[in-house]
Length: 224
Image 1 (spheres, rainbow, N blue to C red):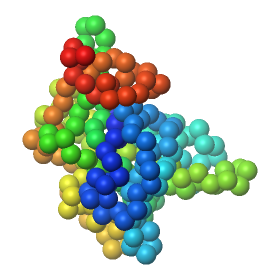
Image 2 (tube, rainbow, N blue to C red):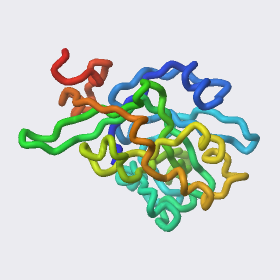
Image 3 (cartoon, rainbow, N blue to C red):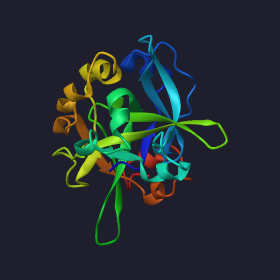
């Protein structure tokens, strides 16, 4: 699964990586947690891409209460087309979540050890996501999202058996363009990425508390 990640790249990196013309000012985050607002790249009807802040925890349009989204932070790629909470979004409301890396916890004799997993070259990653719009009982609208997961790549499978779907750059266009690219054509990208793309190192257990923030959270454990 993916329950915590980091996004601290500057706006220029987002513009360059995802071909977004305007990127709002975004605060560097080293401990992004579920139920928080997260930046996501999506494409409008006019074909232009934009960055929107979405609630992390997808609330289906038919949900009776917002709290349902607390259990919908991840969407398994194997069941996207069938699961009622995700199938409509998979067809027509796909997005990409920019990330500099994510955290995963490895069980051990002394408890769970957090690891930071990122690109081998330190570059920005594009995590496959879905988004939905939900109308609250008071008439307000909530836009929310979920991160799609797959089997772990061989280079990080020793940490956890699942990981986010990391899209290659050539998949960004088809993934975002729901009008021209049917979801049935996207299955080849819903798979573990090239093991050589990723690297990982253990980090401080301070990341366990979502209130903790700062670049020290991604430093290799024992080097502080």
